[in-house]
Image 1 (cartoon, one colour):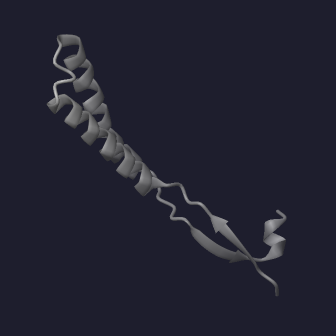
Image 2 (cartoon, rainbow, N blue to C red; image 1 turned 180 degrees about the vertical axis):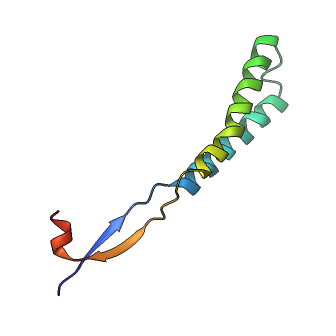
Image 3 (cartoon, one colour; image 1 turned 90 degrees about the horizontal axis):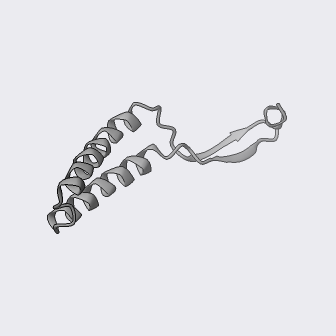
Length: 79
């Protein structure tokens, strides 16, 4: 039987978690640099920083599908 090799891109869970953590770290560095010193900016910072802190847990709750290749029969490809 002939099989076809297909690439499955996965859903990028590890990349999304890393991106969220990097965004949170950049936001913290901006705060340390004094960018969010006013009362309004400080409130926005606290809200955004907390939201970024919750995101990795929410993303980790999703089922992670790694990227890779798999061989499938041509009859399965046509379905």
